[in-house]
Image (cartoon, rainbow, N blue to C red; front, side, top):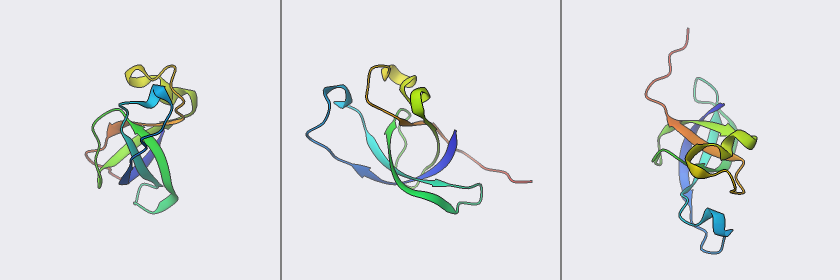
Length: 88
């Protein structure tokens, strides 16, 4: 799992039929302090996240587990919206 910040959305009218109805978001993967580690990754939203939200992403085959994505061509998914990050 990785922390990320949602920076935008993606609209794709021509896409794989298994992605119809899915919300695609642009996420910058960040460290615990918010420094961007990997910019502009496209993730499928499974929790209603929006621009500006901090989220948790999962990748690889685990990204297809939530919300009926098992047969979808997905390798990055938003699985939680973060309320707070506390560093020691």
